Length: 499
Image (cartoon, rainbow, N blue to C red; front, side, top):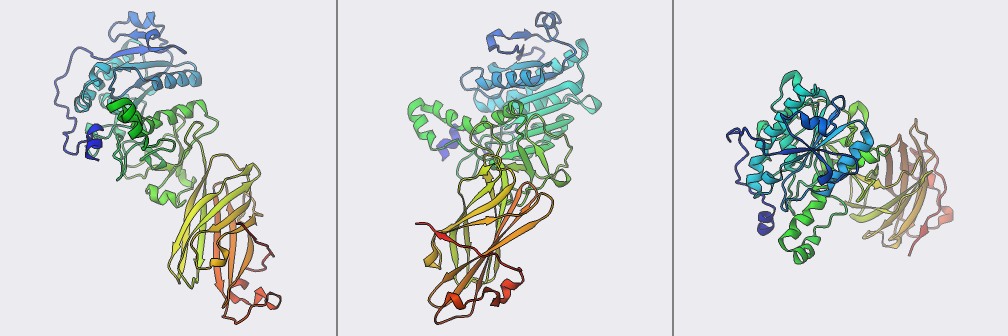
């Protein structure tokens, strides 16, 4: 782990990037106007303080400006994502000037040096913007800086040169770099103070198992944490061994690039697949979100990730927005909440409950949920369910109980529960199953609640009748169980066993 941390250049004792470096009068960054479908060699260099380059590059003074800023580089090459993002911006916006910042000479350094250089590059960007404001009458409201990794902090440093009514319109940080910036004061990193509106997407902040390269703390007005922000689906950390074996030390960045660069791909996806918006929900943390407790859009508790984000000036103590995504584009998935209530258990329960949702648009695969509860008492479990396709209006829920369970005779039970709800009212359909043991009759009551667009609640109640020496189904009347009577008439049902 120490070797890997060193390779990732994550140092707990590294000095922050301070503003005590001398101001350079010569720009060490270059800026290139992107034409749709072009490669870097086909872009046109816009040189600050040389107005003729604006005419030569056909810079349109009436169009807004989007400036893309890359991050640290180990090979000195322009990454393909830059041109994918630039192309998506041109296609989506049409009339827009897309500039690409090139600071590879300062970025192709050991990471601590490149991180320190980011402030100087921010000054270069600020000089460019001030020059365009003077000679091209560029409005600060029409400026959007998009920075990836170290480039996110470059954008922040550039924005910090504008204050008051002249603040830059928007800054988007795509997995802003963490090493040398995590935990630092606002003036030493990207912060909400750097633009009229700042949004950030965190995709590789790391975990206790694997250190990350993205910053975990909130750095924007709106911070998105897809899949918890720690790692991303479709990115396999086990690939690091095969990549190192195949590519040597270059295999390490090749592995972490998948999760780190996912922020760029999510933002690009929001431009290409605008009709399939990715929704994030405001939540305390990812653990709470995994319980499905934050799927609510009331009072602006949700927002769209990416280009079409709703601008809001959340307080500094505002919670982040959490969501799940798929492993590849289009990344949008659909979130549901399931709730299971266990009551009056005689013995401990530890089992997995698989659920599939059936709607007018199709049926989801089996989605596992793990339950564990000691005997006795009342315990409610909530969990998040994610499906990749739109199921439409839900019509039924398919339940499969399997695993270690004290009732060994029903290791696997399957039940379809119909949902007769409407989009406006909360409706519920109740069903019952019976399990026969040698000493008692166990009744399990499931019922579901369909509520609005995102929420599906599945509850289970276990009712144990008095002990009996012999059970005869024909003489059993389920209405004799007092606890069941409060739920009203029960629909008859049949359960099928699966081998």
